[in-house]
Length: 187
Image 1 (cartoon, helix red, strand yellow):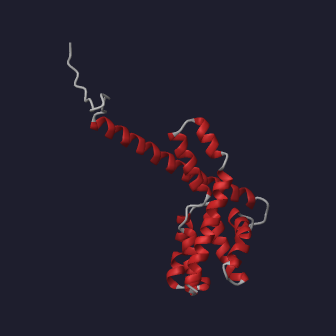
Image 2: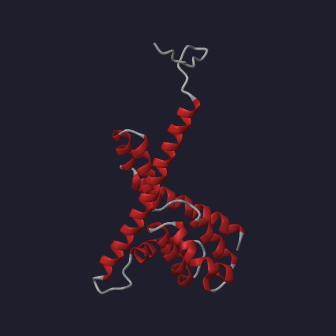
């Protein structure tokens, strides 16, 4: 017979060995990283596919970014910008909602640093930066659902998935409120 060493806690429960716990944690983290990476790629690719399908209509201005830009326009205008500047900012906000914050940051970082166009004033830079640094977009919600799918049972995941529109709307509203609050102090 082999003698098995079992760690017993004071309460009499079996204690998981450290390296077993470490291995399980590493495997779990790796699984989550793969889920997150796959969902980001899938959502950005899906947005690109939808934009390609829209381009088949012959209206090259018809993109998800522009559609969400039009939806975000009244909010950008209410943040205190002229109609022209509000539409430029709303397009960036729409792009962020469709893809993610890193795509837009890559697009506007040079303009922000140079202070060109709408970014000539600090107010616009602050408002857009605050709005972009939130995680309210389709890709992030996909990551959340994908991560929960790996962590919880199907019933709980379905419950969370059924509330995605509410999560997106509340995230957008919080982002707008944060951007408006920051914009009040930097005018």
